[in-house]
Image (cartoon, rainbow, N blue to C red; front, side, top):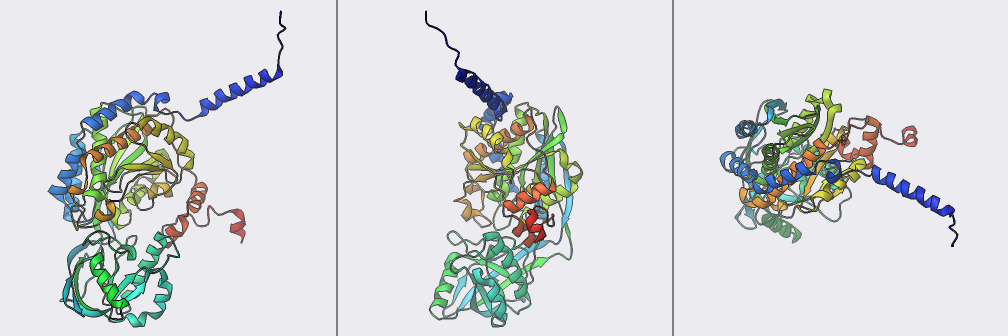
Length: 510
């Protein structure tokens, strides 16, 4: 008979196996493990087979059209959204009013090359910019370098009476948002330098696409006395080539816009699916209702609005109620500096500890490719466990990046995950803020998929047994924002709320 030996290593192995089981127990649970999968299956079927998102986008685009914040058409879109939320059975449907600092209405923008030849030039005014004298003005075209504005500001005298053409020469010395901030400051100096007009586009960028201009704001709640225009790539190219040959183009420009004398009222539109167990805990889902006005505002952000309404309706049609409250918010004022989402934070600050974060779709008409968690790297494992469950619908990656250009930013700034549904953006580069931002740019099947993914994500976050996130402390949030390189941008736009919090101790004493 063979003798059975007791090997000490087996005891070690047993401990390791037990540790492995414990580690597995600590691994974040996805929908298959946390009990939410049956509900998600219902949502997926309802969303993919019975979506009304494209119908909503069609109505918003064709029946209302562009929606500049504070305008009559934007107010009409608020009424439309309230009616849709009520019709689908959302609870607590209402508007939350606030004001922006100043209203603005686009007038006309015309330009003509006078020499060395005569031909029309295609321009459109940027948002919240001023006018030329009635009838317009003539001026020689001179260039300034976007990547060297500090030096350009030292010789403003040469720009008096001129039309300034902004060029990006060489390599940038700063990131794009800091260049954007510098550009806004530079434009303020030009207002008092006797400049006729500026050809600059959004942040000094050159227009993309065939014969398109791209409008937009030039800062957070920023307005400018001088006219600033976007010019088509083709026309700007001719001006630049003439200047490179030593020829000074001369042109005529006539821009007429109107400002209000004071603040104007607008409102976020809100509707809820109240939670069954923890109704006081709130997860916000949305996009922005306002748009620019060169076209219908279909992809920016009609698609996000329609996806949000479609997601809410999908959950309602599936007959489901999550453990926590889903609050669907259509923000206004996004295009002027995230005014609606900052207003939301101020109006709901008292209940901020009960918020879980927000989920935003605002990057055009493309498929969703990433979830950006707004600095919350602690949530990556849990959200990755969720994305594994939706692989049959879409492969979505997860990262901790902050998207500061949409309504996720206030949530990230104040300690919660501002989750951006980052989209594929090749076509959006052309429709963004342009005359091509029309219904034809959005494929119905992609919108239905994006809306369904929004519904699935929102419901899972609100219904999972464990709460996904709580607000971080100010110190931890400030450190995260600094680590994410957001401090410089927020400081430049006077948005940084934390003083010297988040600095390493050695930096504080230096």
